[in-house]
Length: 172
Image (cartoon, rainbow, N blue to C red; front, side, top):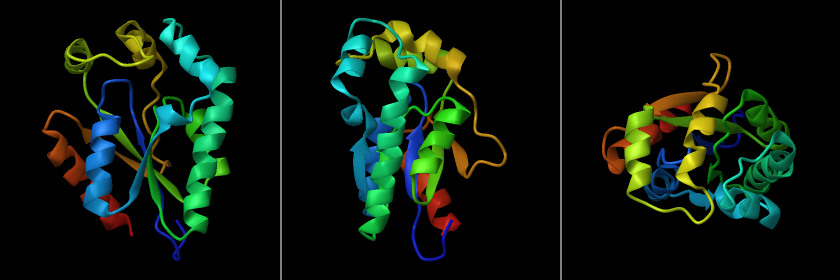
């Protein structure tokens, strides 16, 4: 991290881990703008997911670059940003880091049963619950050398956001 800027935050995790809700709560807590990474997907990616097919690495690459570039734009404007992005594989996170200004990762973690139960209570525009297994199969936890933290999603959203916010502020 640079001494002159606050890092942007990438909220990562499988679908249903609460990235959007935690992102909104964390943004309010830290007074930082929040972007839902789903909004940054190209239309073809959204349609592929809507039809029940998982994205491949080639599909994700331009999206990951866009996410990293958004953090760079935010840093140039003098303000970090929070972006929700699954960032399941280490090399996905490397793409983001390569494109980004300073960035840290907050991995929203919960077990399969918890997340599956959450998904059964909601619907997502283009992310069917049938893709949850493939997301868990793909997930590579943060490595020790990656700037980030794992936050348990069992507590209420406000407590999850508070834990992430406390960790973040301790990094500054």
